[in-house]
Amino acid sequence: MHTILQPEGWAKPIGYANGVAARGRLVFVGGQVGWNAECKFETDDFVGQVRQTLANVVAVLAEAGGEPQHITSMTWYFTDKAEYLANLKGIGEAYRAIIGRHFPADR
Image (tube, rainbow, N blue to C red; front, side):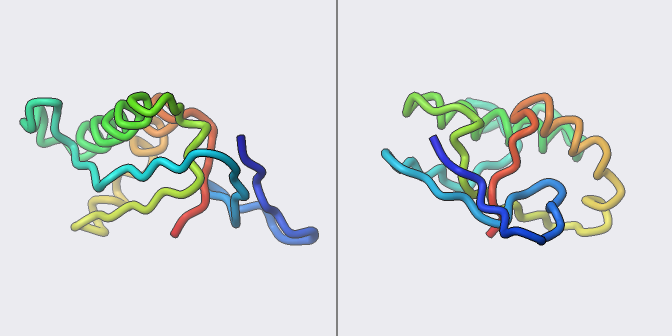
């Protein structure tokens, strides 16, 4: 498994970890987008595409025998900052539904 690295006296981060120490097999998930297994977008809804993207990440991990709690680092890219900020609540709900309350390091 892995260990969350939280220096003593530091404020606990929200939604990510300051660091993660991992052992064992490494799996690298390529950039994922909000389309389904047939490379088709099922929705133009921002949160719906985030939800699909996270489901895609979990599906790739599963191919290697991994689960969301094995993620040590996750980098997000959005093309519209205003839309991202306007949808934080829905993004958080989608994240918790797909990934759970596991917060890897941000790169």
